[in-house]
View 1 (tube, helix red, strand yellow):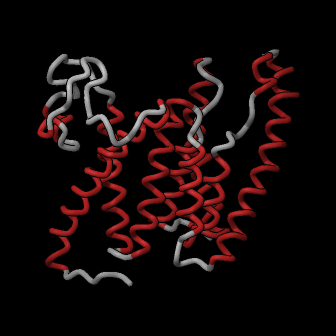
View 2: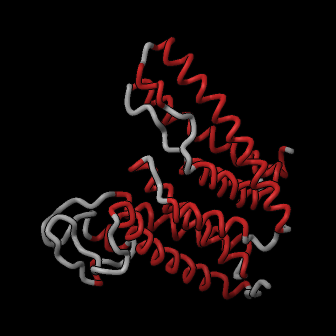
Length: 265
């Protein structure tokens, strides 16, 4: 059931949704920072990681405080990561985009929870190139709980996508470890894998929610988005592995919002 909103109230609701999303984004920042370190996401209160002083509430207003404080701690001038700002803005924009697309409904909150979980995974993956299993499990739960798909269809497409990428991972990994490593005479490639284990639950969730044709477009977009940083890393001889979850999440979100598959297929 979707809550009907009058046109004259749409602007007010949009502001509320944006603020709500930014507030959730502030909490997601806590999860992104603390979970990989094994710290509690409940206590202690938000504090500067440099001087350890507790951040008072009016220095912790999502988006606004970062801008007013110049991205620095009020007490010690330690520079905060720009990721904090990006997470809050992206969280607000995700909430607003989904609101414009489907309005308030059970579907809205389920898909919002899924994309927020993917947002957390994306930023953790970008930094650590590894993600917690329990957050990946949440992706599967939210993906297979999508109420507008037949459950058996969700299971079927989820397994089709995951299975296809297991085979693809094997083929590409074999090429990297046995052919590319010899051509480039790079011993480090002999242990490199094409896909991380964390990519597969995300791919399965994409198949479960979007189905076959839309899911393929989402994966294609993800691969397209990942090409640029991958080429950059190769040219600069930076780290060999490119975090793929952020691009899978971006491709998933763009296809869900704009349904490109209905235009080109």
